Length: 241
Image (cartoon, rainbow, N blue to C red; front, top):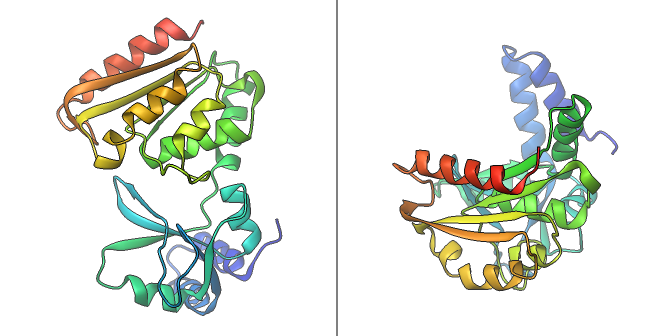
């Protein structure tokens, strides 16, 4: 993909981490550039509904500096709003929401798989949490990486029914690997509300299993050891060495 002006400014900033001027030029370029903000639905007048993602570091919206990058990330046509970085930053001021700029899922997973497979490190499983699990399911649904992935573990996976971009159930129907869908008893509402929907979709796959960890929240605080044990035991039982 062609390098953009933001790419160039970011590369200069990364090459000179102590250069204040390079950092300022990057953020100036970001503020002045037109960005494409991913939405959950088409804009209604001046009312926008950005797609948001909650991870351990906080809540983020997704923005891209080209339409092609947005399309490549989503994998299909999706609603968006074209706004300057400065306008988007103003919209988010005081809300505690950050901007994830040009996130790239498939290329990063591809690179990681190549690294592991090239070194003959044995079967590879994708283990992901929350929105990372949603993105992992999209990758396995769309990329179809052959035999390079042996299993998929989705921890506290969210997803929006009816949205091909974020509907985990739609992905589960099309994934034919062993899948562990594991969540906490006190998980987030979007996770718990779709337990039955995920189970119905995943049950079409003989390798699908769903587990609930009693007392655990979305981040498995205080239940980390049990989570690790459950995932390890499931992988041992379902991924031949």
